[in-house]
Length: 505
Ligand code: DQQ
Image (cartoon, rainbow, N blue to C red; front, side, top):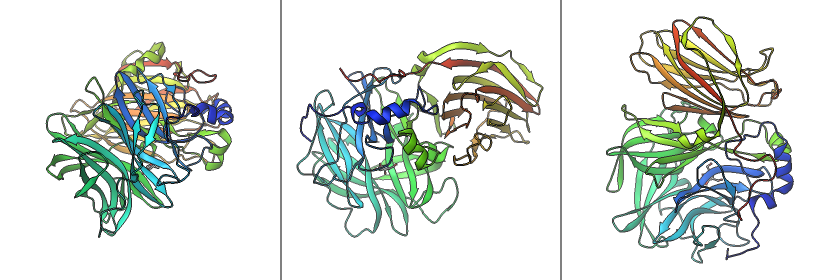
């Protein structure tokens, strides 16, 4: 693509869809969504001269995954976004004529450069595009694809998605893949110029025959690999475990990246929502923070998506740090608090009732921060999006083991919606706890988008009450000995106007 001033903005292309999307009561107001059409993975995430750039997998023409473009939005605070012109459009010919799939942005001696997967037919190959100084216009390299085939002699399940970094005066790249009959992998390459690549070998390969069906199964292919160092000497390899036709989920290895290999110490689930926080990408911002976004997929049918004119939600920006136990701690970026409005505080003390509605706290755009102290064997429940007759309700539950060691975070969506076509499967995961049984809970409710952080462990999901206007109740309850140490809730303002979205000037 050449420097083309007639390029549409995301909103222009998706105008009819955008109007429909605005009428959908389930559309989030402070999570990033596309102006209309389809959104999936975050791409090219970067903080460039004080501006955050969020690119994303985008189909501006329909809320369906087809001939994927790269959408583009910018922000100076990670919360308020401006729609930029579409960054990459599939070619009419060439290696990306069927889609510009996921990739990253790197700084090539001051030249912003994208490395992405061009799709043609049913295969993807690495491509490169050079950006204008403002990162708005992108010129695809004539030599694309810059790697013309997966490594010779290896029977691969797929070959796409990129993690690219500078090391020892060279470029290094990981391409997500899988070795048939073995497991998911990340192939390591090396280059002087981002155009000519030398294959080094697999950085690490999983075992597709271990833990099949489990929530930490590593799959037959690794999508969207992301390698970064964190804390003092820990390396992290994030990937989305994929398999044809089977549920997929994001995982990460902690360990040590040295030379040409990654030696794992432990495997972890990145988000207990599984596919509701998929294909994440992270960057180190200009403040030195590791910022991560993931794709909150829809939990309703393709027909429902088609009717509403939009689909796909970006998580809120998360700040990722290393916990004392060697796992990752995730929290919403503090910038999010600029959207906090009316504040309600609930009086601390023991929770004696199995359930009571908090009449002062209501809404479908909320930020809740609470600390609970759980005795061994105790359970606390926080109810969200409850209708007055309690027929529809979503329950966040934290419980502590009888022996006092650790606990569980659960999300019950079974009564989340009376609509039988939406996904209401529960979600759960392990909850680390100190000997006091303290649980620090942060809950973000944004219409159909829900993100829960319990002692730094995240769980993202989608909920679609059939009576959205009535499903605004909040309540709390306990079984066993539970003390409410603090409870604060804020109404959240919208980060987007209800009318047309602001466009680049
Ligand atoms: N989404 C992209 C791929 C990636 C997948 C296509 C993960 O590059 O593997 O839209 O959601």
